[in-house]
Image (cartoon, rainbow over the protein chains, first blue to last red):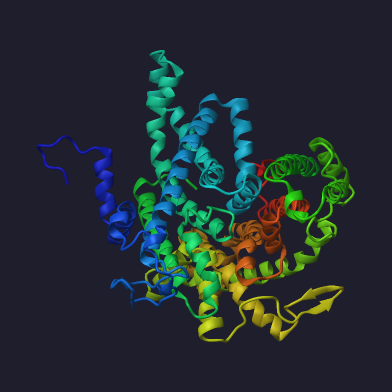
Length: 297
Length: 326
């Protein structure tokens, strides 16, 4: 992979070439990159702005896929009850679904990382209290905890992110604690302690980087879960408000037209959701093999 | 054994208490049920009478105190929307949910373990690979969307099966069951497939991993070397040893099936307690939400306890004293 002139290959470069060895995973990664790019450039890519009412034509409501629009365009994936182009709605919906999923995962990773490091480094009472809370929380399914929180908090983007963070942090805390406990007794930590470095420096500069690989694996799986959970909650009417239409909400919108055979309003947003989740799962599967953290369960 | 049971029960009670405070305070904060439940045309005296009738005039701690006193005696408050005791309302809906969850779990176990066995015994065959690809798809498909697609295919396009409700039921000991009538089964099969699909994928993967591991063990090699028929090697030597993790997962996952029934019940308008929860959240029917959560948390605590006990019965190496840590 690396030629002799270059620096000796870094750990990450080595792992990258190992990752590329599996063709299915690479396809998954490409698909994910395409989806993320499509979401990012949605305003330029989408045929219309689905939330600018001036661009919608009610006469074009509920047209099947491929129908011609009144203004000469074409509804490739059909239109919904307000004459909204479904392809545009999906591209905009992807932005929200991905944004909420990724942001909540990032926050939860940071929270779980700090709490897990604290439990592992402090040990004793800290450790047992934190891990007892983690164990109890993990004995309940994520959807139940999210339902309780949203019943309590109400709707909104901030609230659903808070719920998704609460659901996820315990996985990361447990993973990081496991990794940190294994690393803690190694010589490089003892050496750092021997140098009388401050505890924060030892934890953040020495311990933390070595706990990252298992964390990345768990986080990659959890992003997919977070996206699916957000869609589910939005479908149930407990997630995002109607002003922030994620893919789950688009699917919910089509529910009422399903029985009259107008399948496309629910079908295509679901396919977009499915492709997103499958692509992340494929990448996560290969990451697990490459980084092989036996600690991550 | 007794010490373990006692410790687990204390822990469970603490979880329940913490949960009830959290939920009670939280549900109280999200909105004023008075605005939702009393007609906006009601005059001031009518409003006040309703507030007193619902107990909403008392301070929060007093309401919680009443609630705990009631809960201990089995009274979880009256539903604002239905005017009947919340507990009664939920218990009436519970059989529908349990019925759905049991059939879904049976479906997952009955097909998941054989498929996992095939995939584990022939990992490189086309069949084995197809099963594994299917299980990845089963993991990735969001439950609610699969439910919609099942309705679209079997109820709308093919017209083979009904899309909502429980259908005809037959009463046994005062409880209505759909599994006792043909029409009930027709209504049950789509929701059960929908709810069981995720667990089916999980069981395929679990069984396959267990089989692959067991096949490499010396006792299996020895059994083969003895010339035992393949059916006996697989049935006794392999299956028996992978049953421990599988039984644990089946037990633990049953609780999650009951929780996920919220989604399936909403899609198929199945009149269970999950649909009741969503309806209650939408109208802020506080007593019903709190009662549902307390009941499902109790259910979970109970299931976890049973799984720990089953674990120790299946595997004598497991000591109950340490079981709380897994």
